Image: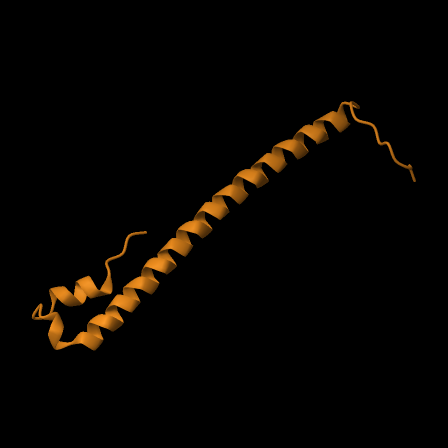
Length: 82
């Protein structure tokens, strides 16, 4: 996900004289910082989601293999049978 910093958008629509509105530029800089931080968090969450999908897919493969072994009587229960 790509985004344009708010300060860059405002800068393109102003007189380009940053000293006229120092509080505005400070606020926009903080806004850009938080947007960047949020974007980083989104990327981290996406990476974690992808790792989880791989893990779940591997578990599904393992479960299918175990089911196949049970069906072919290649697996025995080592506990108490009820």
